[in-house]
Length: 313
Image: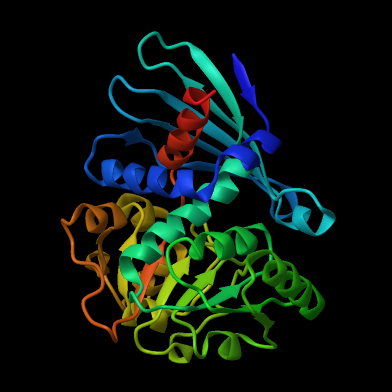
């Protein structure tokens, strides 16, 4: 049984490879061709979590599961916040064939999914990116967004000004794009065409009234019911598109908050990104529309990435 470690994933799972993989995975998910269960999350001490995500790429295709721990404070200590494994099984004989480092796959495929959504929903002329947060997903999102839009400048906000500045210096040097740390969120998003919210916030840090018309927002940081990154106004004013409608209706915290106070109902989730990508659902309807992509992350993305790495070995 093949084992693919973190370093190999980082080296071989490029955005040029992963973005098309995720795009196709989301199309097949929305078409009902793949199979998966909602993730199970076991709360641990100190806000840590353990997640279990099973799925199959088709009735006779490869299947497997991701087992992942989430320790958000790890990043400040130089250790990945998401650690675990993706276990891949052969669809014909049921044998386990590959174990892949889940933390590195998660970091890359999550950003690739936001890039896919941004390519479908952001205005074609979008060049200005705002990133809320400065952790692992902030770095991978900066990299991924440059693959789908000609990003000319990036703003970043985080609660620790020194860490935001360090992030700005690192990403600017790597991407060759000016990156400016901002003292507050309104300044960071004031001129943004695309906003990526990738924080550990438990209460809203981004308010709808701070956004310009036509902004596209990727909501990534909250992966389960409870913590939210944006206020109800932003949810209500947006064309709200899910990675998985079933997942968002059960675990999409920002949507659930707005629904709980009667501002929206289930119809506010107009559909899934896979439907937009397949041409079955209209994405952005006007240049001034605020669009939101709610990302929970789905095991079919992990399995597709693991399969590609395994088969190319």
